[in-house]
Amino acid sequence: MTLDPEVDLSKTYDAVIVGSGAAGGMAAHVLTSKGMKVLLLEAGKKLDIEQELRSMEWPYDNANRGFLPPDSHSLNFNEYTIRRPPYGPGFEKSKHLYSYIGSSDYTKNIVVDERENPYSGTNYAWVRARCLGGKTNIWGRLALRLSDYDFKAKDRDGYGENWPISYSDIAPYYDKVDLYLGITGVKENLDYLPDSIFQRPTKLNCAELTLKQGLQKMGRVLTQYRAGVTSDGLKHNKYRTRCYGRGACSRKGGCDIHAAFDSPTGLIYPAMDTGNLTLRPNSTVREVTVDPATGKASGVRFIDSQTMKDYRVKARVVIVAASTLESARLLLLSKSRQHPNGLANSSGHLGHNFCEHVMGPGITGRAKDLVGKPPTLDDGRPGGFYLTRFRNLKEKHPNFIRGYGFEGGSGSTMFPRGTDARGFGAAFKEEVRRNHGAYIEMGGFGEVLSRYENHVDLDPVVKDKWGIPALRFHYKFGDNERKMCEDMKETAKEMFEAAGFEILHVSDRMLTEGWSIHELGTARMGNDPKTSVLNQFEQSHDVKNLFVVDGSAFVNASCQNPTWTIMALCWRSCDYLAEEMKKGNL
Ligand SMILES: Cc1cc2nc3c(=O)[nH]c(=O)nc-3n(C[C@H](O)[C@H](O)[C@H](O)COP(=O)(O)OP(=O)(O)OC[C@H]3O[C@@H](n4cnc5c(N)ncnc54)[C@H](O)[C@@H]3O)c2cc1C
Ligand code: SF4
Image 1: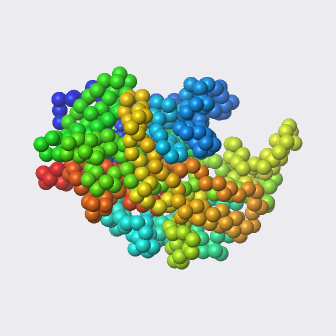
Image 2: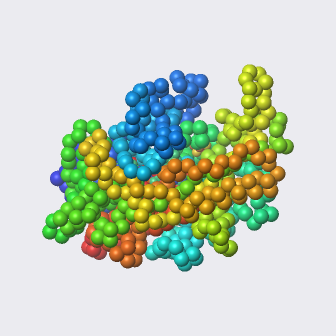
Image 3: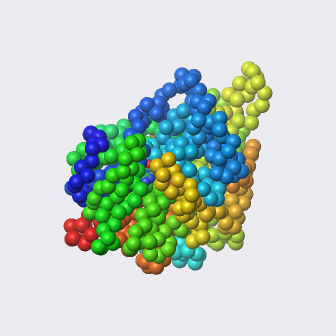
């Protein structure tokens, strides 16, 4: 596997892909495996990721005990909600400013420096990772499928639009993703949360099992964290190793033996081994160019992120995979005589119908019978549990539509969770030790409705370090989200009570818009070109040789984490793209 920064700009590639995260990596894998000559442009650096993550480093071996160096600052909740923009006045002392996710020494080079990458408008905690692999280097690994409860949600409650596909269209592609990348979990046979083809599951611990049993009486389901992690290994991929349960997942957010899926080792390096992929990091695409004669995409213009030099490259097909918000930004930037409102925007829906997940309400409790018990190894696994959606499945909730699930965990971990111990010295330490294996906590993730008025556009003044207009947010949670969050808080309490836990803390605070890092829906799919940007194969209705294969294509957010669906959809779209190319239709 070699890096090839010297791109042959005289050549017309079969396809150019913008962005190397989950979506761009998957497009590179599928298209190169079909023999297409592909150029992958990534705005960020190729990091020595093992050096960044250092999963086996003990906190006491790190100069800052794993936290940021003193000259750097990671934004907190109040800084997102009170200061506008969050990196405005008041932060002069900090040389580097990072999103709330960039709070450790291990992630600081993976997430962007907020000052170099500004944005404006309404409050939004926008987490970006500009490096090879994007956010997949540090994602939380929860890998869930959507079902027809999501794809056909309008049929159930009349709100929004149905997707132009059903579960049966995407199911074979979920299977392909499972088998190619590996996923752990347990079959539950739920029609609203279909099973994957699972590798060996992780184990639930004592308090988690107690909660599971408590919920069974209520007809609710708690299952092992379905992690996008290979627990049995993948014979076809020499860049990845099976999970050894080292417990660094939650501590550092990344896996330096690549048991957890990341786009470089899972998709891009194997694609480079085909000899069909050229990768150019440090390449910030600023425009998708169009042929003035046909209005079709002709390639892209990009800036070398380090030298600031401008380049153009030609391709028969352009695949935008820069992540939901960056993809919308790029298409809005790509104005031309034929496409005066931005590329692929004849519907006026580009940048609109922006949706995600709402987070915040959660609970911490204590399993009293575990207090004082010997410690167990509970962080030696890539996740705790997932408590599946139970609202608006059979019955209709009177106050809100759609649903939510909870992610959570319990047990002894390197850094004790949820401790309510007070004091200092030996007595304090003893108190922490006696209790820490008994804590259990969980937090909700709910569907934010897709609404036309929730949108992004280009700021007329603010520009990023490369002189490219910044994104401006016009985005707020609504009444449905607020009522859903009230319900999350109540049901969290009711479930912990049913399990017999002592309740220590209940949070009813909604976190800032953006906190879930699951932004979706700015170029939605649909059958009607007047109300959607893409068709069911993520192909632009307006520009036949333009595909947008990331979360932008989502019609609604569902409440399940999106990455596995992004990749399954992308695989399906790239199969279609390759067939259409063979037929000469692109
Ligand atoms: C801490 C964290 C936890 C998460 N947990 C989960 C989880 O448990 N489950 C789940 O499903 N999802 C989770 N996610 C979200 C998940 O990471 C994303 O859904 C996924 O990475 C999206 O893939 P993508 O390819 O669309 O975007 P990204 O992974 O962000 O990749 C986009 C790439 O495009 C590049 N790019 C952007 N603009 C340009 C440009 N103009 N030119 C060239 N390149 C460009 C970026 O540098 C980046 O590398 C989490 C994310 C984070 C950060
Ligand atoms: S627990 Fe497994 S997936 Fe997580 S960091 Fe350790 S080896 Fe990687």
